[in-house]
Amino acid sequence: MSGELRYEWVRISTVRSTWALIGMAMLVPAGLALFVSWLVGSLGPDAGGPPDGSGGGGLAGFLPLTAAVLCAIGAAAFGQEYRHGLIRITLATFPRRTPVFIAKVLMVAIVIVVAAILAIATIVLAQALGGVIAGTGATWDETAWGASGVRAVLYVVLFVLIALAITALTRNQPVGIIAPIVLAVLIEPIVGAIAFVQGWTWIDWVLPFSGGAAAVSTEGAEAWGHLAVFGVWFLIIAIPAWILFVRRDA
Amino acid sequence: MAISVEHLGKSFGSLRAVDDLSFTVPDGVVTGFLGPNGAGKSTTMRLMLGLDRGEGRTDFDGKPLRDHAHPSRVVGTHLDARPFLPGRTARDHLRMLATEAQLPASRIDHVLAMVGLTDVADERPKNFSLGMAQRLGLAGAVLAEPQALMLDEPANGLDPQSIQWLREFLRHYAAEGRAVLVSSHLLSEMQLMADHVVVIARGRLVADGTIDELVSQRSDVIVRSTDAARLAGLLRAAGGGVTDEADALAVTGLTTDEIGRLAFDGGVAVLELATRKASLEETFMQLTGDGQQFAFGEAS
Image (cartoon, helix red, strand yellow):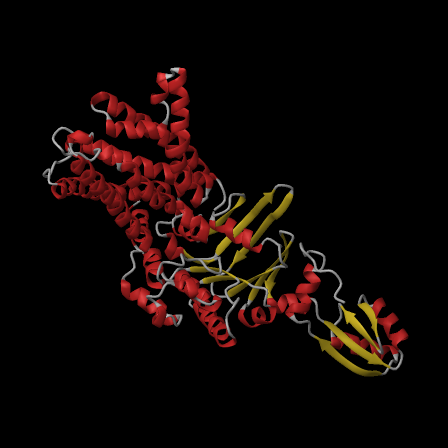
């Protein structure tokens, strides 16, 4: 297994797009957080801003953007290999396929944990900086610390791993990148709206990406429950992807 | 490290791509793997490595590749013309492959120099020519100094000097006691490179032996005489196969000595008697004549 993990680390770390995506995942949401924090702080309480003049929407507003950018790294774990025929080299080098699958999941998860922590720290700093620029002083988003912060990191990791699993299942990198984003941004909000009209409150406990986002925006047991739903969805996609990876032609 | 292939089989829908294929790739020689387009060569190689799922078994030194502790030290492969990510440098591509056997950086430098890619080692190979891509593929295959090599059409895109280098390299590699399996459409090149050939058509084995054995089986004797009809009768009576060819007879199943003696005893004067050795290409065409999966129409 250590050989597969070393292979995966070199695979991920030797393509420029990995570092470019991590940089984008930090800077784009942070830039947006800076702008929102400054805008809300500048507007002040009279214009609808928070009473203390601070604000920025918290992590929940920006993390989906971070996750959406990073999911390209997850999709690349299998997508690049199938697209360029590298999977045959990988599986000739490591003929036991289950350790290869696990190594891909683990190494992507490790890289995304680090990237997510950096992105969250950057967003929190940007929000504080926005308040300083607006003249309301630095306010620190407390949801970034403790259990909330852990859930935020796990949300990003699971988002990216779902992209990985979809790519492994379909052997199609664009599908692996686009499907989670379309589900999170388009399909689930529509389904959620229909469910709201129909009064189907249970739907919040079924939809994966809405549940994932709720894990960041809510607290306590409810938040962990939403995160668990998100995790179960990852397994629902990853288990058939693993079975097919082991059984089908490379 | 001989490679033993037993009863390999694989179907794609109703198409039987590989059918009960068994052969051995011996140590110490280059084995050519020949067959027309669509004969199943690439599928067979993938089956041997466990990349495709199918029937049968392939053992490397007595056990499947997956049961070896360090597969990259067992067999090096080069199955695709451009087996790399266009955005990853040549050196990093080899660094990645070196992780399984935990090879030092100096080994990567060595194989890059060996295939002549040192100057472009830190460039991204998206603009590599086919020949340079083949060299990088070969560098990856030999990186861990495996006991066997499996190369699918490695000479495609190489210039004549590079082909000569490849031929000498593979013969030298095999001469060190390793098994080398090379598929190719370049029959004249294979005649120079390989000592042993495995020929398949429509997924089935049609020949397996040394090139000399295969070629001699399809060689014949040309005999020109003063009485072709009488000599043909004598030769047929002795068990030879006789075909009329312009002013001569083409004889199979009898040696020049036997034909000369039969003609002398029968009172027929022989004007010319010579062995006509078939080329590997002629032998290949005879062996695979109706086995081409995707045949051309008539050339106009």
